[in-house]
Amino acid sequence: MKASRRRFLQAAGLGTGALFLPSLFKKGAKAGVAGPPMRLVVCYHHHGVPHVNWDMRMGMSPDTRWEYALGGLTEQQFSACLRPLWRHRNKLTVVDGLSLATAIADPYGDGHAKGWVSSLTGGIARETIEDVKSNAAKPSVDQVIAKALRAQDPTLTDLVSLETGIYEYNFHAALFAELLPGQPVQRVPHEEQPQRLWNRLFPNGDGTTPPDPVKVAQPDVLASVAGMYDEMATRLSTEDRRKLEQHRDLVRDMEARLRRLAGLSCGAPQIEDYYWGQVPHTQRYDAHCQSFWDLITVSLSCGISRVASMQFGPLFVEQIGGNGDLHHDYAHPSSPDQANDPLHPTAVQMMTNYTARYASYIANLADQLDAIPEGNGTMLDHTIILWVSELAHGGHGHDGWPAVIVGGGQRFRTGRWLHYEHDTLTTTTASWVNENNTIGLPHNHLLVSVAQAMGVDIDTVGDASVRPKKASAPPIDLRGPLPGLV
Image 1 (cartoon, rainbow, N blue to C red):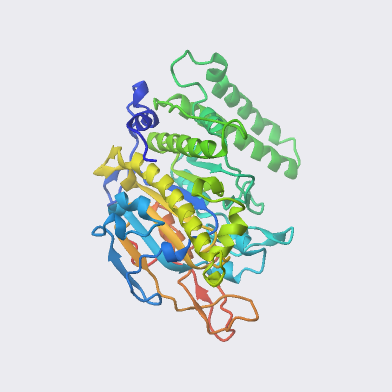
Image 2 (cartoon, one colour):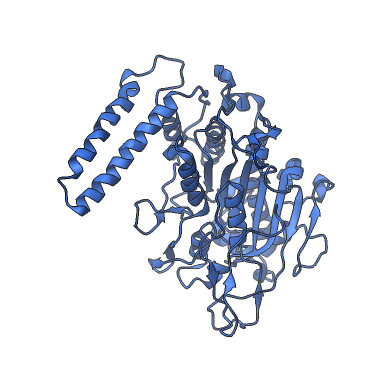
């Protein structure tokens, strides 16, 4: 499923004559050195991984901290789940042994919901919805980064972050933000149709036809309307003024976005866009994934966006060689604690196929980014592709949480498998778990590392600490970056 040269040229805008290189460079990898900006692409899938076919621990202890280089491994030495990423092994970082300590401590929702809420926010949920779902209490790391970058660079617009997704149905999201100032965070809406994202990125068309004069005039119209807000504000109550100011900011945001996009020369990629039932589901899934990769590549390279996300919905069983219900027939029986289930071996194989297919999608995006020269490397060196899930495995566990980073070599030491110790006291509230049990190092430190690598000066993402079950033990500190990543 490697992207074709023709597909890459389309994504790069080279087919329409655009230069397709960033023209405004930010702070680079070394202090005081100008260079391309860092970008982030969050890739999110569901159900964790089948560890027996994901792990590459080479017989080393699962309880201590260690690392080894991936560059010398052959393709066959890579695990079946991660083998599609072998060609990027020198720019790959596998982070192994962490735990979602806040999800384990979370009293709200079922196992999936705890992970959806915690994995990217680093926080415990604020409430339960419909008994099994949850609302987050903290914004997700992608939205934290996007907000901070926009504060640093006033030329960035609301397109600083792109949220995309491919869903079998309306599966639960993992992205949260403060959509209205002072209000609780809410799920961030994502785009499932490539054409609608294309229309946002290229409001005046792709340049092959004369632009629509109405669209060209929109920024000036919006500017004139925005100027009326301040005049009207003096006549309103405090609450009405607050509502008006929020609406004014949205209008000004749209104006800035249209002006910025109108001045760019990035070529628009050709995309495939299908609605439900228009083509076979597997064709739609693959086509939409590639179309979103092309749009994300253009947007990041052109400086329209700095953060993007792809929320993969569960694959169709036909895509992994199975049949039946993926969740109950394969994901759950693949759990390590179901090893005696007669369905376990087949379930593990199907979930291995499942994980490997996502790895192949991510490898395709890495191919596109790595083919674009930039600074003293490629665009992949200046992009962090973070691939995570809401669970550690199909048994709803949150310990042994897998995280994969592709790229980001301007910030992280890549080409390594990093395994972290298993000596954090458990944070569970479950009565049947011994208070002296241990879990992996909390994943909050990885989120902090990613934020810092993107130039955000923070030491906390989500909760700053979490209580262990053992009442006599001190709180577990969740602040600071993940040691050994840089």
